[in-house]
Length: 157
Ligand SMILES: [Zn+2]
Ligand SMILES: [Zn+2]
Image 1: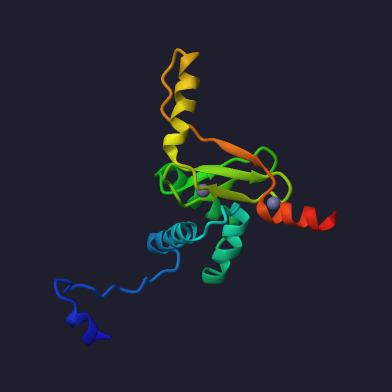
Image 2 (image 1 turned 60 degrees about the vertical axis):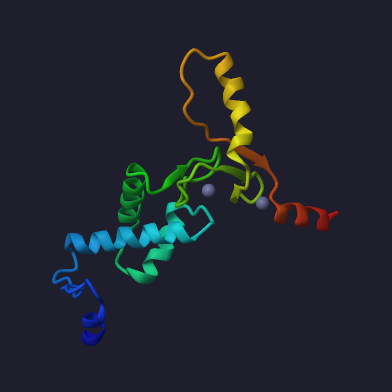
């Protein structure tokens, strides 16, 4: 371990002190970082509850309230996006690049749509035409049945 540390050029201080107290802010930032990483790697657009279920594996004592607090914080600092579907719990998305979502009205899944944002441009112009304010961004939600639900629906017929 220490030989590895010494071979890292330019990083003479790679050694980190272990947290003394499990309730120190360091632990809290570790939880937040873990939540951030989970959101960055999943494409599921999980609910807070699902994030909580996932975090419990790494942090058995974490509470749902802590997960909520961290999700709100990540949303506030722009590291996550909150998506509010019309008829189910809020979802969280680690992909903060502008993109559009599809919402399946049957299984309630949320999927990213691979849609060129330039295709949305005419929509901005159309929306601006009859509006005296300034439109800066949009968040278009598409509704319908996802591929899986289409498949199961056709199998039932
Ligand atoms: Zn579906
Ligand atoms: Zn997304």
